[in-house]
Length: 254
Ligand SMILES: [Zn+2]
Image 1: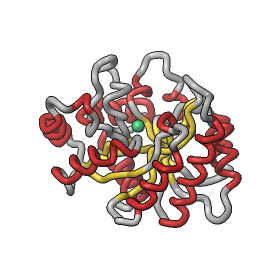
Image 2 (image 1 turned 90 degrees about the horizontal axis):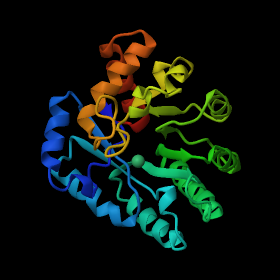
Image 3 (image 1 turned 45 degrees about the vertical axis):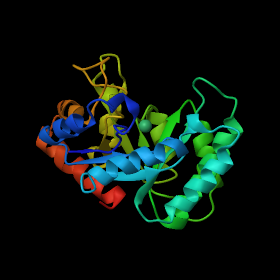
Image 4 (image 1 turned 90 degrees about the vertical axis):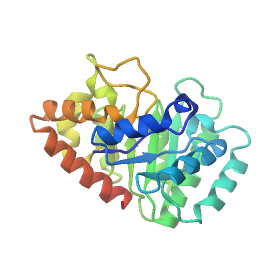
């Protein structure tokens, strides 16, 4: 099982990070992908990756909630880092208008610039989208050239959104703890998405799955998500692990 979205480099894990990694290895999680947040978080990812070079992979990008008036400077600095070749994806990028719509135009511009990096470098994106699907689609439609590959992480859309995305590209969908929540409508979408387009993710430290809901999330909880997906799709946990591993390796070229 691969955790395709883990922020265990962040300060919520400063006291026990080595133990968290150990637990995730013991839980059968074979690899972690670390999505970036802003310029300040890049050294944190790098420090963790230096400790576990074979066990982790890094993405670089500016999270939509981190798009501030200085976003162009942050993007310029990240773009220069991208040339080092040590990043496997551009992320996380996207739109988030849930709390604050102040920087809607800037978020769209930052998203477009970073999707163009994907095109230029042949890298997949890791997309965060909360209350911003119309904007994401508008930006995707504004791209010239080939549609980049990528994952819609912590997918929170509906069937119509999946249809609209499929008209534009062959994307993957990151499924995490939300799928285990009692009132979640996500389970109904799993057969529509199909196992061959699902990626496992925790989004640690957020969104811990049942029975750990409300606690700090960590990558060792991936089996709860994996097993719940198996139950929903009427297949075995082994099959979900096997197919989602192939999916992650295919998308991220692991
Ligand atoms: Zn994230």
